[in-house]
Length: 213
Image (tube, rainbow, N blue to C red; front, side, top):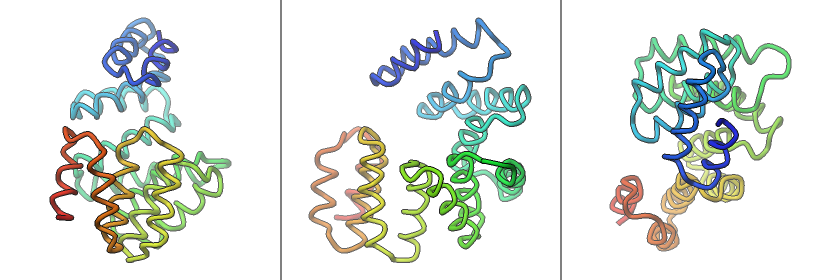
C-alpha cells in the first residue's frame, strides 16, 4: 500500500495516494514511515489539525523521525505558530542537528525556524550546511531564496530559483519563487509571463500577479 501510494503520488494522483497511505497506517498503526507523507498531503488540503495529530504520533513513536520534524516545521510556519511554539520546535531541531550526520532537510527546517524567529545569521549557517550535504535540497534552496530576497540580493535569488525549478520541476512554489525574484529585481514582464503559464486556480499565482501588476 505504501509503495503503491508513493507511485501514485509521483504520478500526481494525490487523492488516490492519500487513500493508500491511510490504508498503510491502518494496516500497521505503529509504522511511522507513511505518516509524514500523509500529513504533507493533508496540509495541501489545509487539514492542519489532522496533519498535526499524525505528526505528533509519528514523533512519539520515533523521537528521531526526521521527515516528521520537517513536515511539522512546514505546518508550524503555515499556521503561523506562536514564537514559543517555534522556539520549542527549534530546540528539538537543534538537538537533532548537532548529532553526527544530520540530514539536509533537518538542517533546512532548522534554518526555516531560525529565519521565522528573526535570527537570519543562524538561518544562513543552517541553510549553508544543508546545501553542503545536498546542493539540490528544495527546502534549503527555498530558504536561501527567502534570505536573498530579504537582503535584496536578487541575482542570488533568481539563480537559486532556477536551481529550485531543476530540483523540483513540477512544484508550483519553485516557479512562484522565480517569478517573485524576477519581479523584485525589476524584470516584471518575464515574471508575468511565468505566471500566465501557471494554473490560475492557484491563489498564490493570482495574488502575485496582482501584486506585480
